[in-house]
Image 1: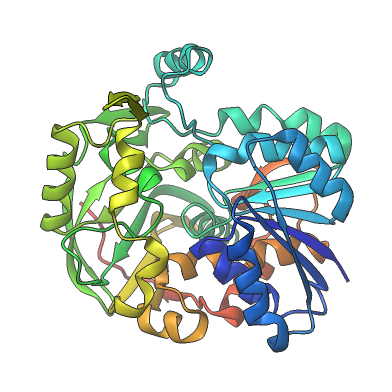
Image 2: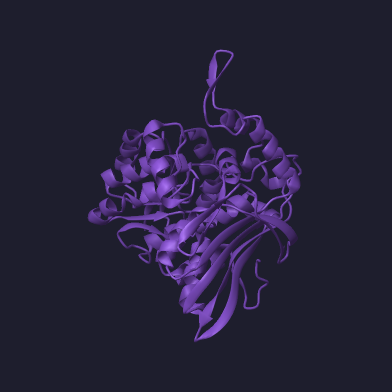
Length: 419
């Protein structure tokens, strides 16, 4: 029996909450909290007669530690699931520490205001020392390690698909398939078609900032940074077909490089169609991806926030998105003195996801791991005090839960490698 506070009520939270309600013996009570309480109320009303999980709702500003603490102290949860925006990771972590409750999220911290002088000072120092310039990195959350350890609390970072499941795949490969891993290529393919000229499959602010940033990868103990979209490969994905994919910076590379220290190279690739890239480049060229406020007719607006308001809501894409995703990891290394390769991945169908949970596969593939990560924490399987990423825990029960609750793994021991 447990009480869980879910902060956020967007597309990913919608999936995670529905999955939690399938396990009322573990998720006995849920409180859904968001800045917009009406969204929480609508979901709670829909699920009321479909589960024995007791669901309540609340309004909260997740940017306010004070408001978060008031809610946590009132509800007294065993776990806080942060499925809000990555901008709010630090305030929610701080509230969890003050209220002595375990924490988890699905994406690592990045600042909403990249012009903030205090943040910029730390960021510029990190860029110089570490060698990559993406706005998102683990350092801000890793700084909480000692405080969570001393409090006897567990913070689980990035328990979505990538990051999240991809790191569990790496831990599984290390545990079962390899004695030493030389290279890891993480491939994220979305073969879905929503019919719009341009739309993003998750929060436009986060998506477009991530994709338009310089790419980077880990090689021989250091970061190599490249211009955005400058490394392109083609790959034939199971059940999707041939797709163009591009090397991006991605957060799990940072933790994997620390936790699998023998690895010589880690890369992350994501597929994009030419139409998406053309639209994005045009928007970038005219300043619409900027996070710096401008004055327009007497009002201060942030260009990328205005663009977000114009684009289709990712949560609305479910009914019109057809096709499949394929996300996984390809490894090279050695087992018992012999060279080997291995590929572990999941294929997910957009329309099947929508029929089950009113969501397209992008939200589904993040929401299901969020529930499974919470399940690991609440059942005592992942409880080491401190701040941890997924690959630091035993992957076996987590992957078994994914197999059971909607994201079964596929494997190949003779995959095509990415040049």
